[in-house]
Length: 167
Image (cartoon, rainbow, N blue to C red; front, side, top):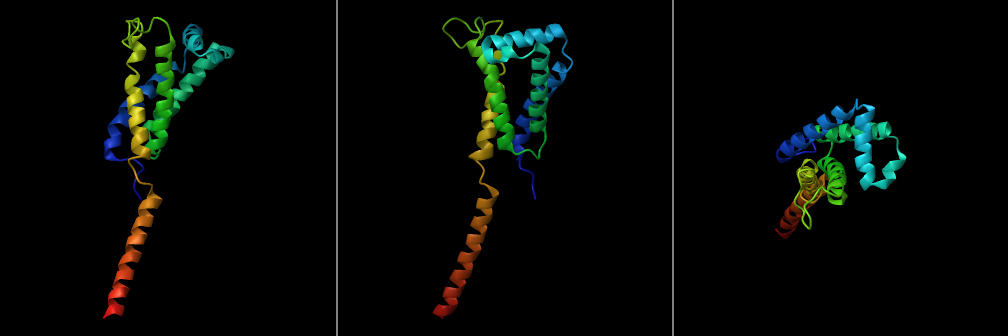
């Protein structure tokens, strides 16, 4: 039985996974000031986060990043699952970029100096979407492949039986 990933998926999974895992581990011990900064920035764009305590938010963000990074780095996690997690996470990051004033140049998607740190995370969205597509659309489910093999064998037996009956 093989792994649920292919060779072409290893590089994007490692690059994104290592980056996000490192980020999550770095936030793990965030002090009150750092937690308040992350929380304030996120709550400004996503008001529902304002109900959380800053330290709780930083801990949740850290845990989410560690989980997503680990999922990307673990070859037993199917590509579609890892890609979906990365796509959702990076979509949230790009929401910060698109909705926070001062992140983009007026009337443009181009980042300002302040927005550059978040705009660069667009590569995470690209990797996430690529993995999600690769894991769902580009790959036949194992059951379908197995059914196709079974059908192929049955068709060969039927053809062989027809030849014998025709003789």
